[in-house]
Image 1 (cartoon, rainbow, N blue to C red):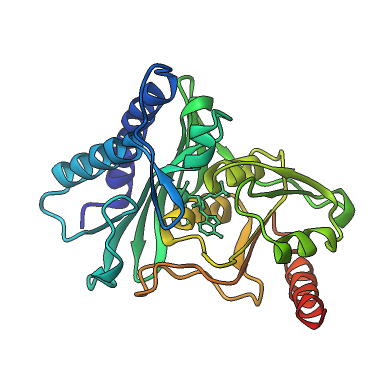
Image 2: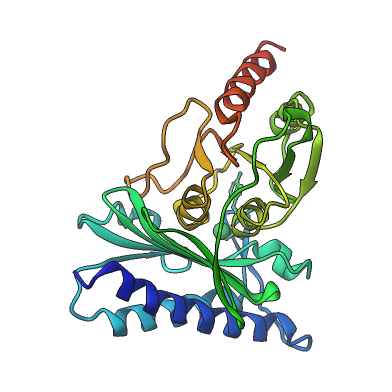
Length: 282
Ligand SMILES: Nc1ncnc2c1ncn2[C@@H]1O[C@H](COP(=O)(O)O)[C@@H](OP(=O)(O)O)[C@H]1O
Ligand SMILES: [Mg+2]
């Protein structure tokens, strides 16, 4: 395999190119985004164009490599898991609703997964003109036009001072009950998982909670943001402490997931599980 630093260099370039392309769609006010709905989730021509851009550039750069490719826009529910060891998991536009509603909170996720776990990640945030990148064991960095520097999550603070970020559009009764009963009541809505994790590694937030309802977030929503967070010193697990796994055959990430700046991660997970038991008993 081409070495990881070389793969990262190429992926960062692809991330910047994809960010520029996606931003051009965001800023073209006269553009008809040709919004369609797939299982209740919107898709625009920008999702498709950026997916095509990322896939074609990665495939051209790694013609000699035995990589699989899973992109939100080209994924077919019957395709099952990629049988090889290394697979790219790509979300060309995470936060499509926020993209359409012009909140600026949208991101691009590119992760390389080895045997169900991410080993390399790029999260691009076009409106901030930043990319975040990480490799397993190599730390997390933020890059702007002025260069890059490492990032670490915030130091420990009291539970009640932790700032929690949560989805703006994927809300339901069970999640609302959970959010109301957590010890951290400083809560704000941010679109896109990439943008939520960026807020945590930039020390503007501390905790992110995702709880599936009738639908669940998918591998491409989480693989890249997870590595960006954990390499910055944070934790990202199921409420029961299990690590997330990708390319398992079920693209959905069911259940409760908690991402945090790590101090008190286990306490928050236990509290979340307890609160769900209370909800079930209502
Ligand atoms: N309960 C859920 N069901 C389906 N998708 C979910 C979800 N929660 C989060 N997601 C996905 O996670 C991404 C971020 O969501 P949010 O901005 O609400 O936090 C979105 O990806 P896409 O925009 O790529 O579809 C969204 O579809
Ligand atoms: Mg997404």
